[in-house]
Image (cartoon, rainbow, N blue to C red; front, side, top):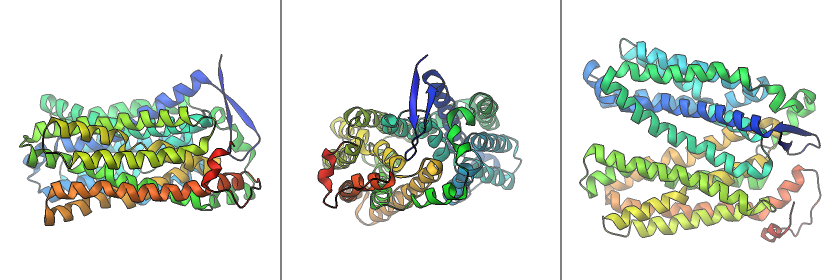
Length: 439
């Protein structure tokens, strides 16, 4: 049987994980991520039915969706820290159980207040799953696969969103909106029960039980913000997702206004663009690992290339008139717009201690939301009110230049910060040229 050699970032001990078992862990963790986003986004597919049955306003419907995002934003970091201490496998199983039961509660809700409480609990259950889940996944694979794994895992959120809305709408049309929620809940409950039976903490991270002294608990937390390159990585990733997140949110409206597409057709075309972005995450992550296997620090340079490449492609796209050529360029631009997800995830993992990887990815998620996914659509909407959505879209790709500049700053300090984490000494003259040095 083949084994993956796994080493902690700053530890000499090595753990061997069977390759087949590692992929089983990935499949189950990825499956739960799909369940996470299906349970979150199925609500969007049944908005019209809820609005008609309970006479809800658009504001009330928006609050049912927004409360989940709010809970995720508020609780991601504290719950990830708890999971790092309590045990990631047990925490993931409990999270999945909670959001699945809460989704089942949505199916049973008799009025708006009950639905709101159920959606609130969905947000609590899902709050830290993405960050802790990716920490589990990267713990069972070699370090040179981190960009691929991070990008593939994060792309699962997009695939789950599309799947949740598509399946939710289909089930609702045939069986009613309650069964849409019930179907998502049953899928999540099945995986939640299987997960702790198959994925064992002792098999994926036995070194955790050997390092429970106070010093081992306090020191790793400082690595979350102890280096200039890890802080720059958080910021660069957030700025780049400003672009991708904005285009995804406003694309249905853009297609409706400038292509005269009906709502369903615009939604379908926007879903294709979302899938291009998800596929691009995976492909860019795989390319990063393949090209940078012997020089992991070169992932920073590739992240810069993704930023500038997406800026160029999307700028050209929104300079073109409406038509197939423009749609093709938008798809190409979105293919690499989220390409920084994999390299950024790998850089954060490399620059922080293994025992706080869940919290590190939670911090990355928080910054992604604060700098990119949350303000991007809002700012673009305000600019659109003044100059129009098409003109606003022409400005959005320029944020990628700022992201590239921040990643360049990270590149200048990356090698030195990696060496410091490992307790090595490096010359003060190491800078961007340090990319030539192989760790």
